[in-house]
Amino acid sequence: MIDAEAFDAEAADIAPLLLGAELLVGGVGGRIVETEAYDQEDPASHSFAGPTPRNAAMFGPPGHAYVYRAYGIHWCFNIVCKRGSAVLIRAIEPTHGLDIMMRRRRTGHVRDLCAGPGRLCQALAITKAHDGLPLGHAPFALSWAEAAPDIASGPRIGITRGVDTRWRFGVRGSRFVSKPFGSRG
DNA sequence: CCTACGATCCCCT
DNA sequence: GGGGATCGTAGGC
Image 1 (cartoon, rainbow, N blue to C red):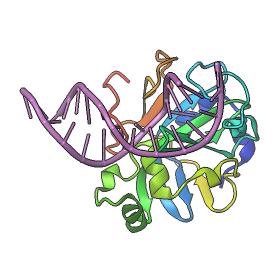
Image 2 (cartoon, rainbow, N blue to C red):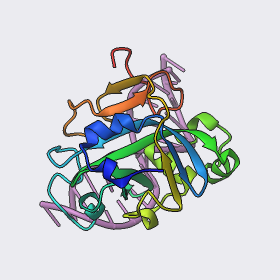
Image 3 (cartoon, chains in turn red, brown, yellow):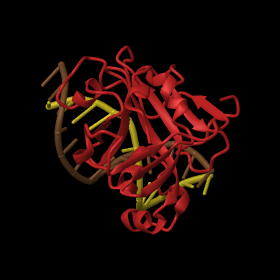
């Protein structure tokens, strides 16, 4: 299980460290294979303009969840790091509760179950109800990778500002990421 | 394979 | 009143 103090650090340092970690919600989930970092100096970050009701969790304790709604439809799940920063969990390799996730996602395609921030929240049943909750307690279970995987990086997905900051990280060669990484990543 | 676009909510200006 | 840290489907090649 995690030590919350470990998350009181730069999101850009924590994001690659989370690759290979196991994330379960209510016993359902798998291995993190794709992350992105956001911090307060970053114009792409929800925290860029300071605290607001939506991003309050980003200014709360490290090691807690920040969950927001994207495009009016999807939930997206972050792990809060040092004040005003967080790591967006973008993809998971499903390992626990495949049948439950397939039912929630209404698909039999394991490869797409958790490939993308909205999809993984649907598969793990993460909603606004989890916003601000500590990751060291139920329903969450988070354990660091036993061995560091080979890591790819590149520009973040779906943003219009801060596009040159290469704060997207992935397990090199994983077929469960939301989009391939360039061979130079 | 690829690109285009609509859905739908809450926050923020 | 504008605009997303997205996804699924439709259509073309």
